[in-house]
Image (cartoon, rainbow, N blue to C red; front, side, top):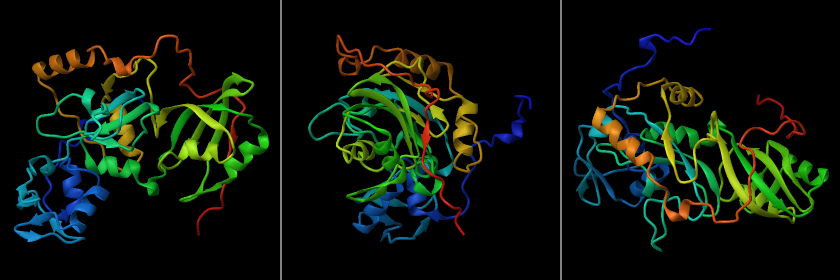
Length: 318
């Protein structure tokens, strides 16, 4: 198969003609995740054409939608604009737009958008580093996060404590946590010796601190945690801590297809936009993003060779 693609394969941002569920419409406009918007509806904070919105309500980009009595600009929701950033998150940054304690956030370093908003695909806690994805397309973000699409996440993790085959077997079979059963689908040794060993682990969901809680349930401690893959997207080795880069058309299409979305052409940037973004991308990361002097922790971001343990396959659903 050649690498050439027909121009027809990429649709230009299609205009939405039919009413859509309010959550989907506002998520695409960058207001937040569908879950966040549902909470706004339940709290009575949203109005559509002067009436308080209800769950399941549909709307058009031309409707008057208000949040806390302030009109929302739905121009961005009239068409699908799908851009995706890869960000190498440092320790010390929180995954929220604003932090009441004044700590730096992952959004501080991202390029500013004129008519769109970056939406974080999932979260990483303040002490976890590595791959984060951001997109302007709320539908893409929602599908990548939703458990029904079974998008796997891979982490490099350093464990302090004794790890044996029986423990790995339990983690692959499933462990009962406070919020239900959880398991790794894959565990691979990735270096280290004695009581400090590295592993690559994979799981199919993104519950709060799930990787840490799984290991801690076995009486060992996670001393380092770094996400290295989200679905088909790996953290590039060239991308230093605290920096970002935008996915090209092919990578964006692969990500879209992984959640059954048709490819959409990435908007062309003006020469001025290209220059501005390149200058921002090369800007020196903040002090919080730099590795502390003397830090020696290092692990390969590529898949470990050999020694892989996988969870037992479940029988197919009937």
